[in-house]
Image 1 (tube, rainbow over the protein chains, first blue to last red):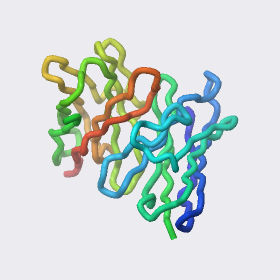
Image 2 (image 1 turned 60 degrees about the horizontal axis):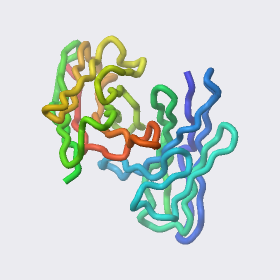
Image 3 (image 1 turned 90 degrees about the vertical axis):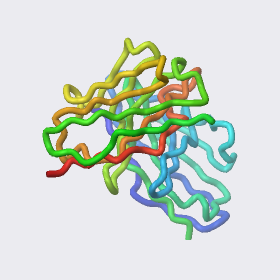
Length: 108
Length: 121
């Protein structure tokens, strides 16, 4: 079974850019192309930030962007703000969904 | 108001059963695939199950297969999760989530507030 690996934590200063990676083992059907990213504050429900690798839902800041190269997807947050401090989860979809372990973003 | 509201969580003994419900409002429930996703205390998200618009396609995570049953009632605009043979490993906040649909694949654009399930003797 495929697994998605994220760094446990990343950090950055206000105004900087950070990138969170999401690496998946290749499945029998050739890997994943449907990657989404979620932001979660403690005690709150997750919020969709990116879908289909690089698309932003309406209302999500343009500071959030997604990309994918080979078997690794990435979430980049530019112009880091204090309110971005949260947990971030990647997810992939083939015929079922799978989440990464999550990354805690600390804004220094 | 577009929202999902879960209910039915609580404390249950190992081996017991529980049925979760999720009430949808503010959108055409019957147009969307729906999922259950859980989060154990202090842990990450785990997808549990999804059901298609008609209910004809259902998938489960291996960890719950054979014990959990997902269902939906479009007339009641509700999603359900019947959980049997519960163990401590099933202790988690259970979220109901809407699949974004259209040209958006396998992403969840609307979440409920979650309902806590605790399995303990």
